[in-house]
Image (cartoon, rainbow, N blue to C red):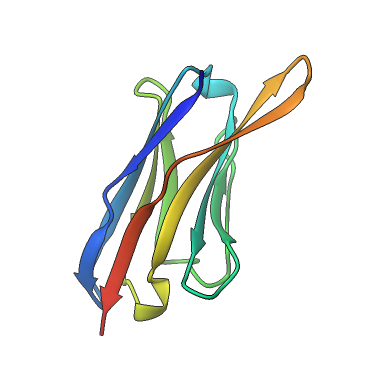
Length: 119
């Protein structure tokens, strides 16, 4: 069974940095495409950054130049380095993986980690 465990969230002042981790188990990690999402209170969940199995990355315009997504296949872990944080980055951050299977792409989510940026 696939499990995703996020960590690294917390409270930080504007301009600070945090690094989120998403540790996966029960999946052939190197085949998976993965995305960090976030959801702020009263807002829809939005995609923040994506990394594919071949290492290609994509970012939301709001985080380009400040956030970096990466993966360590040896550790079955995905990361989101967040620099120059702003109060509007406050949200619950979720990792999502998409695992190819003979039945189509399977989708798994972590439980979320809270990021709070104070002004």
